[in-house]
Amino acid sequence: MTFLDMVNTGRARLGLSFACIALWLAGCSTPPPPPPPPKPAPVVVKPIEPVKPSLPTSNARNAHEYRVDAAKHLYTLNGSRIFKGRLPPMLYAVGVLDVEVDKQGQVTRTYWVRAPGHAPEVMKEIEKTVRQAAPYPVPAHLNKVVYSDVWLWHKSGRFQLDTLTEGQD
Image 1 (cartoon, rainbow, N blue to C red):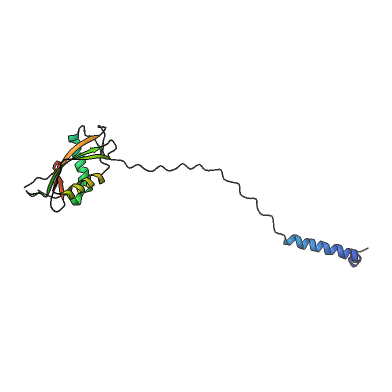
Image 2: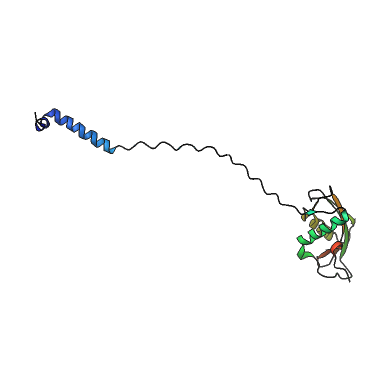
């Protein structure tokens, strides 16, 4: 039997039909999805430690030496509030304040030795200025330090410290 004879037979047609359908279905199928990527090895992330600001250090060996470093520190932070030049003969307020600074440069206590009682607003402003200036230079050779300075207060609200004064007329 020839090929044409087979084609003409019903059985052959049915087989040929199934073969065509199978080929057609094979061409339409989607390939299986690719395997998932391998899981990356866990990365151990070390928390970033905050940068500790380097604090200024004072090499003062006693309170008198430390008071110069503290006065310079206050002047640096309050440059626009410093009275420039020689002070006039009459000042609005004069006060003597003791300041205790711990080994980290933090103010732990203030004490008025001579308070300008007639100007309580000046007292509050001086105390605020002293506390806001922390941290002070770290007293490297002292566990803590108590230093005194004289605040010379002009009626304009500007001041000088006796340690760094430019003098008075």
